[in-house]
Image 1 (cartoon, rainbow, N blue to C red):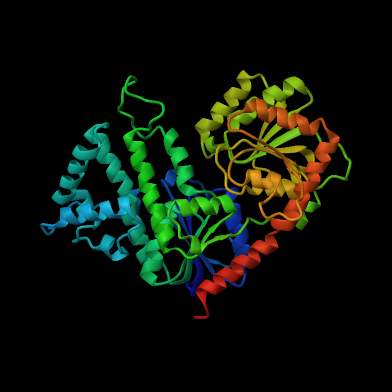
Image 2 (image 1 turned 180 degrees about the vertical axis):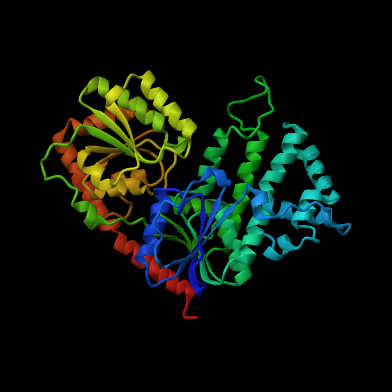
Length: 500
């Protein structure tokens, strides 16, 4: 879609989210655009492959005036298939080596977009894919540092790592003029922000809802498409394979590049900001802006004080491995053995990882949960929260989960794993004065017994439940109202755009 081409205020750089994925960051982006009607937005969607996504899932706001999509692992879709190697200077291999060493060992600056777009240069796509210098450099690196995988696996991994960079460079070169670039993640979107801001000499604002490199590491540890050539005797469960580590280091470099060029660098809570600094961000450019929700709307879903909570626990989230749905299912089995009246609902999209969804359904069948467990798919909060007694998050990684604070606004306590901002949500922020109390329970990762016990402790104790519900409501109202968040982003965008 592309409407008329007015000057764009803010270009959003979105990796694997809005407008083709529901919930989470996508919902946040949609709300941000709609809440700032005086700004004109563009959106650039970056996906893996065209076949991995369906139709647009949102009604696009009228102030989203430009939308384009790019698929990083569909090279033919980008209309380029160069086959003729360029004639490179004799020192091209040394230039390649120097760049990689600088990026590997420091926060050195990446190449300019023009360097990637120069088809006759040492860093152009043709040079990388087809030149003798690139071949020599790759084989040299394999011989020096990559003892474990086969050369074929190493070669294709290196090509797949780097291939999206030229798509991103071409995308950056063709973007319409914008007063500011904004990305809610590092990774490919953050790197596109680096290139686009450099090319147009405009500011780049970076935000992380979670820590992207940490979440990618988790995904990469489980990825079946990364070949592990070690035999069973060579595999040490405490060590990851060389190719997985290669991918992790690649995303760490992309993250440092985004941190280097962005100002400010936003996180959702204090612990995440501290992690960004440890990962290479300049502390002087880091800010914390918590997520915000429509507290007033959700307040209408609260039960009357003293009303008993329904015997329903609910996980609001996508059915994907990072949410560790299987621990929630196992906790449900334990809880149902103690409280036969319990129901457990899984509310969220199920199509992002069909194989994992099938595994979760199979586990529920094996545990004979029957009608105790329901996969409800996407539902509106108004249809779900009034029927729920407790929200549960079993994730192995989170930022500041919107589902948790939406539940707080509706008066629901939270049982969550000790990840991201969940401890801060339940126990309170370090600067919370006066203290608002405990809004639920925190348990360890992958511990269904502890999760079941925490749920039962709240549901069986009316006084403890009522106190947790009061703390949840108070914390949502004090810190996480959407109006506060929108005002801060509006001021931030205006500050960075200036009056030009």
